Structures are given as structure tokens and as C-alpha cells.
Length: 429
Image (cartoon, rainbow, N blue to C red; front, top):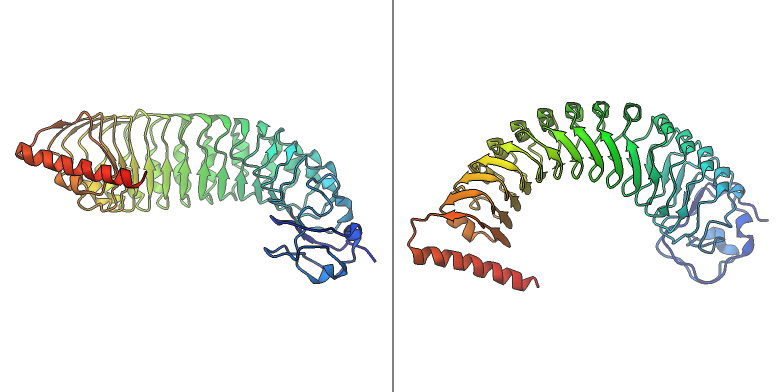
């Protein structure tokens, strides 16, 4: 009467179960069943012989909070197993390799610890593997590279260590590779990158990867998101990065990258976010940056950039954040910055900028909230448009003021601005 050998889908997702479950459930006859869905509603209490007629919550069934007693051999036809977000503990059992027909395995958002078993390499039909948001703390087994049909692999938010296994170069169908927030190390070897040409997302942020970004990165022409920030990468940004014309997010901040920003970055016309802050970049800001007309967020702060701010930043009319602070930039603030009518945050502090503040700054930027121009060599009049803007932060320290306004009028403008900031501060505290 009890037989689960035809079960192909088992969803154990983020639910609660009250009452008892018949111990024979693992052998219950569900031959016609292809999926057992888990929805937000579950009839609490005992599960009886009507079990095959309801959509119900399988959370903790048979496993009591662990995977230790889940007999994967009982499900030879299982193709989809979702046990995400149900507070599983202990380790991933070795016999998971017996579920050889699995195509999708979701174990994310649990408390799984220990290692990823090498037997996972037996799941050669696997297309999606989600183990993120757990406490896994081993190296990545090289056998995982045998799962050559993988197109989505997420191991992020664990404590995995060591380099990427060389077998990862076999993952030629991978489209989404997420290894963020681990303790992974080693170099991004060219033979990895050159075989991952189907990638649309590569997320390796918050690890300890070293070495250069290989020029082969330019082969990933389908890439939309590249997150390599907060690692120990060195060397230049390869000019081949300009080949990634589908790219929307490029985040290389908080590394040790050197050299200049390649002018080819101007080819990335679909880019929405460009983060290169906290590196050792030098040279000038390429004027080609003005080609990125879809850009929302540009942060080049905390580098060694020099020269002037190119007037082409005025082409970035959709920009809401411009961060260029703590560089060696000189010259004047280009008035074209005022063309960025969506601008909210403007940080140009701690540079060598001189001249006056553009008189129309703030006039055509109604959303401008924070302006920091401190620690420069600016002088001249403070535009009234700045004082009238709805700012929550205005820092002009070390600003040399020359004004043709009568002193009492100038003081009243500053007082009004200060009072406005104080009122906004008090309102938000």
C-alpha cells in the first residue's frame, strides 16, 4: 500500500507542521504524483489517509530538524527537492548521492554545517543547486565539477574555504555562479573564466581571492552582473572588460587594483552601477565615462585619481549618487554636474578642487539631499540655490568664502540653511 518510488517532486519550504505524521509516509503510494506542493496554508493536526488529496506542509516530516534520517534511496525518481528555510541542522548526508535523478536541490536558508559531501558529484542531472545562507565550513569538493549540467550554483553566505577546485572549469553551462560571503581564496584562473561563457551573474564578493582579474573576463559577453568587491585582487582592470556590453552592475570596490580606469569602460552603455572605490587606481577619470547614460550610481572614491572631473559627467542625467571623494582631483567643479537632475548624493570632499561652486548647483536637482565639498580649495560665493535645497547634509568645511552680499544677508542665508538642517535632523530622531 505504501510506495513513494514514483515521487518526482518534494517541497519542504518555510512552513510549520503540528500534530503527527504516519510513520509509513515515506512508503505511501503516490504513484500518480509528480509534485507535492507546499503553499502558505497548511491544515494543522494529524495527517491521515487523505494525504494524497491535500496540498500540505512537509516541514520536518521524517527528519525532526535534520537530514540524518531522510533516506534518499527511497526516492529514485526524485527530480526536485526543496527543503529551504526550514531550520535544518547537522550536515548534508553522504547518501544524498543516491538521488541520482535530482535536477533541482534547494537547501538554502537553513543551519546546515560541516562539509559538502563529495557524493554530490553523483548528481549528474543537477541543474540548480542552492546551498546559500547556511554554515557550511569546508572546502568545495572537486566532485562538484562533475555536475556538468549545472546552470545555477549558489554557495553564498557560508564559511567555505580554500581555492576553487580545478574541476570548476567543466561547468560550461553555468549561467549564475554565486560564491559571495565565504572565505574562499586563490586566483581567478583564466581557464575557469574562459569556460564560463554562458554566465549572466558572477558573484564572488566578500572573499579572499587574490591575483589579477584575467583578460579572459572579456569572453563573458552574456554577463549582466559582476561582483568581485571586497577581495584581495591586484593588478589593472583589464581593458577587455569593455566587451561586456550587457553588463548592468560592475562592482570591483575594496580590492588593491592598480593602474588607470580603462577608457573601454565607456562601452558599457547598459551599466546602472559602477563601483571602483577603495582601490589604488591612478590616472584620470576617462571622459568616456559620459557614455554611460543609464548610470544610477558612480563611486570612484578613495583612490589616487588625478586631473579634472570631466565635463562629460553632465551626460549622466539619471545619476543619483556621485562619489569621487578622497582622491587627488583638481580643477573646478564642472557646472555640467547640474544636468544630473536625479542627483541625491554628491560627495567630492577631500580633493584639490578649486574655484567656486557652480552657481546653478541645486537649482535643477530637486532631490539633492547630501552635498559634501569639504577639504578642497574652493572659494567664492556659496550659491543661494544650495542654501534653498532640501539638504540633510551640507559640508563646506575649509571653504574660503568671498561674498558680495551684505554680511547680515549672508548670515541670514546660512542661518536659514542651518535651521532647516536642524529641523530635519530633529524630525528624524
